[in-house]
Amino acid sequence: MKNVLKGRGLGLPVSLTAGAAALAGAVLYLILDGADKTFAPLGFALALAGAASTALVVFTRLKFAPLVPAALYAAAFGVVLRVAVPSLSDVWNKVNFIGGNAALGMGFAGVFLLCAVLGAVACFAGTDPKEDKRG
Image (cartoon, rainbow, N blue to C red; front, side, top):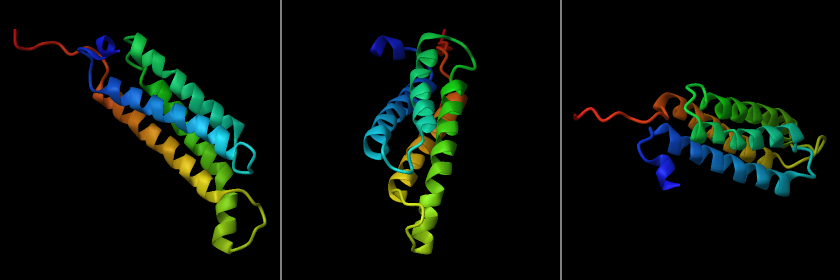
């Protein structure tokens, strides 16, 4: 793994960190929130797809490669947030109309938002090999 990172831009380790966080978040999202009313299979799938698409960043030199996982993380954030908001409104209104675990929903939305932000940072930090200018 160290050879993959050697000579590459700062965006690659940032993208790998986002991918690892998204993968862990998606697995925990399935385990902890899978049977609850704040679970969205689409959010789970988008987070997994984002984590898997990190391979584009690692194994290709495409300029748009970091954008793919970042967009998938942002979409996962939006889906998870959309599903969790009705449960959060129950907390705000002090009723149990919708049900679900608002804290888990907001927590996982936060994890996927963090992944989206890290993905955006990776887009601007660059993943290409840096040229040695000392020569």
